[in-house]
Image (tube, rainbow, N blue to C red; front, side, top):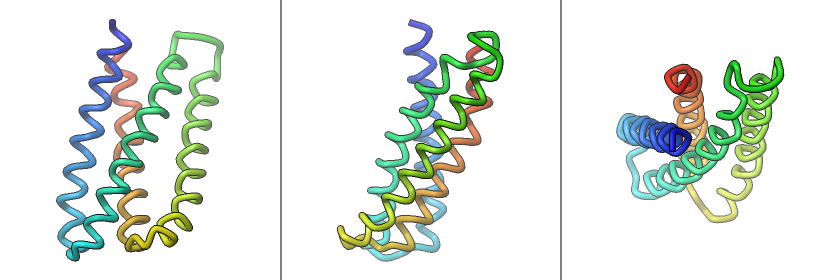
Length: 124
């Protein structure tokens, strides 16, 4: 039960950060196509971040072998990088606004990734 609550809390915080970032990015990306690209990026970022957090959570301090948390965090970072690299050509193929799609995805990844340590500490 505690694990589900922690994941739900992370999902809520991530969703809030993504919504706030979308509102701020809308000041720069103003067209409908750019907004559509940001919405697609938001969904992708949310799914990837949730998966990354679920991978990271069992390795929090005091739960497992020394260094396991860092290894799990590196796997999550690698997963984000791979998604970003694969998303760039896919966004072009699907005809999304490339600038809005990539800038928003990187922004969403960064903000939610910065929340991970705080939420892992809160969950201890």
